[in-house]
Image 1: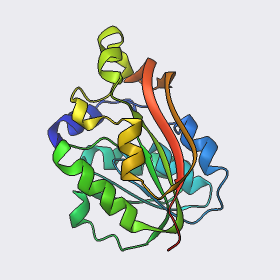
Image 2 (image 1 turned 30 degrees about the vertical axis):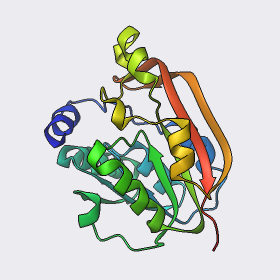
Image 3 (image 1 turned 120 degrees about the vertical axis):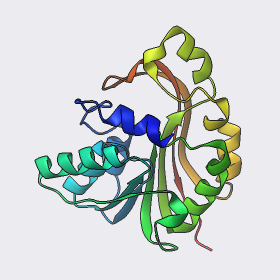
Length: 205
């Protein structure tokens, strides 16, 4: 996976564009700035946007090339982001460190997926927010008619509504969509796609 992403992000253009994800942009605008984490942040489009809106930004990815382009973009925009390269258990984030975790097309290997999500939940403060958009399991079929829509080809890396409701059991879902949409995000997220989007709050115990 690391080699795949390094090769993709080595392309000259920003392969998912420089503009933030539309769903993320809309939702982050409704929350007062604080500390935010971007897992699997790639070339940095969402992290850089959040920093421009006064968020204290942390991000990580397994790709060194992704980090290089993210830091280049942050320099172009005159903002700062803290960007680490590696696997989540190695990165030293602290329990209840973040006000928001933004999971925007953050797809992980089947062996990491469940553990990573549990760790993200522990990194989120009580009453903190998860902003989520990713491909649903329906994307496997949509890829066949529209390969440019993107997404993993391994169904275990994709999500279902039932799975996410179970994983985030106890969280308060402010909205939850499982829908077909039209993507327009750089070269590799184009056209018809199956996504799940939600905003959820961690319970105060």
